[in-house]
Image (cartoon, rainbow, N blue to C red):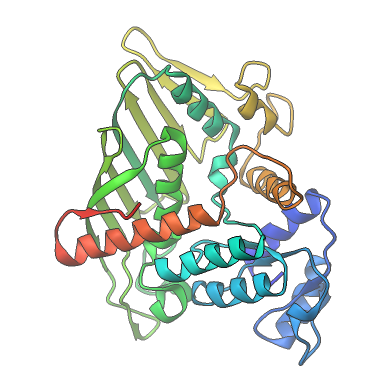
Length: 350
């Protein structure tokens, strides 16, 4: 484990649930490494010790965004599979270099777009693949948070040097567009975006990354959609919502109510609740507890890590977000930033 913050704890719980042996952890400071090792159940890397000289199977990278490419490439060169927090890299060229390096070395990597692992997301995907929704017409998607609402709210992600040139979109918008493409099996082919930096200064320093993003998207199948991203929406804690309208039915998934999928029809609608006895096989596979016992974010993360480990062991798993998906998110992010800067439509590189 590289890193010792919130995401390292989340990854650790998932690794343990998947049967992983927790070996070694390193952080940006020796004291931080010792503290994280004691809290999470690892051995701390010794001062001056090269973390990548050890005999490891998988390296989880949970460090600030600007360091992802360096740590990923070093881990791959040492012969380890990787699970790298998103964004895979702060630019698409670096993200592609990680994917290419893994492929050339015969190694694998995944990126935790974990909202794919809510069973009701898989159910929505299955319904679209079966043709239940008909032709995709429109999408209304948003991801709203409030944790950076005030100018006094600060975090390393605000600094472009640590977090990269995009903040709100790279941090949470990437989850939303990944989910959009995953559920619909269609690609975003072009975007028209605008961004705002509401607070020009935080923590005594100038801010160059965006607080909010609004954009229109065109999809490969001819559908259109609106996407709204904000980290300054009062009362919204983790409000990822995606509403897909097809010619036969609509589907609505809200991450804060992950046990439900709303299915809308002109002649009557219904609210599906998670029940493995009634869901599609892929959705039922991800039901870790019986119906009526709520599943949430950590359960989704656990399933993602278990699938990642299975893929690293040579097994096949449906819907695992790979390094290619990390590259895809970086390409969309760059298209969004370019569109906002040039105030024009931008084609997303395939």
